[in-house]
Length: 177
Image 1: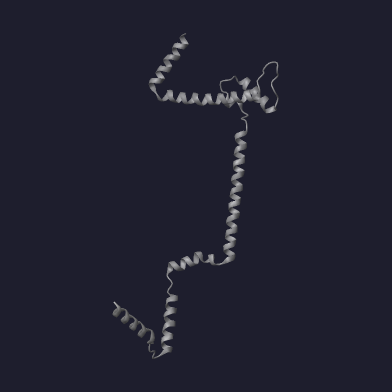
Image 2: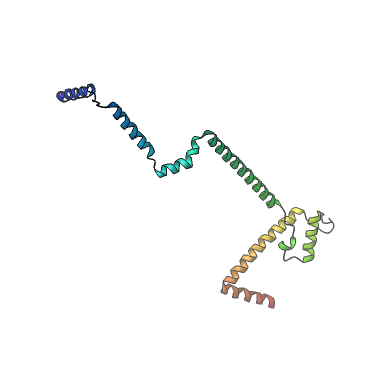
C-alpha cells in the first residue's frame, strides 16, 4: 500500500513540474479565441426566443413598473369586488314592492292597497287593522315559502300518475261533501 502511495506521489509531482511545450503560442491563443467565438455564436432558437420574451427581466425599471402595474390591477380588482358585494347586500335587504307577484291567492284589491300603502309609506289605520310591518314581512315570506312548496307539490303530482289519480279522487270526494 505504501509503494502505491509513493508511486502516486511521484507521478503527481512529475506532472506538476512538467510544463507543456508550446511551439507557437500565438497560434494557440488564436485557436482558443476562435473556439470561444464559435461557441458564443452557437445560440439555439429556443434560447433566442426565451431571451426575447424574458429579456426585460434584467432591466430594472421595466421590472419595477411591471410590479407596480400588477399591484394597481390587484387593488382595482379588490375595490371592484367590494363594490359588488356591497350592492348585492343592498339588494338582498330591499323589500319587494310588487305585492301582486307574491300574493297570488289574495284578492287584487287588498294586494293593490297593501302595495300602495307600502310605496307611499303610509300606515294602516289603528281602528281597522293592527298589524306591524314586521308581521306583514313575515306573512309575505311565509307566503313565498308556501308558494314554492305548492309548486314543488304540483310538479310531484304531475310526474306521478298514481298520485295524480289519488289526488283527483280525493278532490272529487271533497267537492261532493
